[in-house]
Image (cartoon, rainbow, N blue to C red; front, side, top):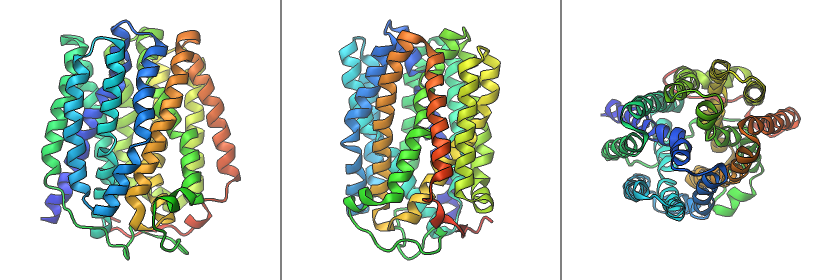
Length: 400
């Protein structure tokens, strides 16, 4: 039965990320095909993310109070399907903004609840979260390739919304089988010397210096990458005059290496330490943006995108383990949803700003700005002492 439960997590992450992949990759291309300009689809993206910031932490607070993680996941998925239907019907600018806001509010609880459920499962059964999350990367590749294939043959509109909705329905069905057992506060997924004692409550999370640090670093690295990725489709298709299938190849170049790297990433964190891994991640982001900004060749763009797997490992395995070591398990869901809220806020600011930059100066300028921010992140990681409590990090999984 336990093996079957673990298999459900693998399948769910594969399907959920496959659903999310195409929508995230192609939504700006879809909006541009409707006649909107950079500032407009930047505002559409920013509006949904900005409003959701104030509601996302409620998912975590309610979850930590009720422990109904699975129920909240199911509610989020079903509400997302309803919101997606109305989004697909919109043809005017104001309608797209309203539906983008509702869609982001509905889907904002799904990923945090899935992460809490899977982390609790891994904690209880001594499993490696990275291996489960790697299936999400595989799903991301398949989803993007699938929509690229369908879009070239049947048009982007039907492929974009039909694939997203269909895969969400299957994900919803799979989530029914998730275990509902609570995490054991005395049994953490990692062993860290001198880990902080009990901290309970929303404001304890906000006052935790390690949490604020990882949040700030994420704003300068992984959130920056995600925000720029929203314009990668425009860069490949519009600026570099590539096809939808080349855009799908970009997704393959970024996500396929994650499938392997995420499954073994935790061993590199143990071997080299968190500080070195985050330094490598920030450096890879800096290199990517330099190539993106100054090499007008789609194949060079695709080649250097392989480095994406390192930053993804930090954003998933690294961040969750770092947060778990810095806060009490009693507020873990609150911390994860608060992090997601701040991610949404950061993406909203970036998306709005990059929309204006794209319209006025083009996509190359977006990547030049990104390279400067990534360079600052490198210096911050070098100087910080926030990773000191992760020395001696050791994961206790049966998979090792």
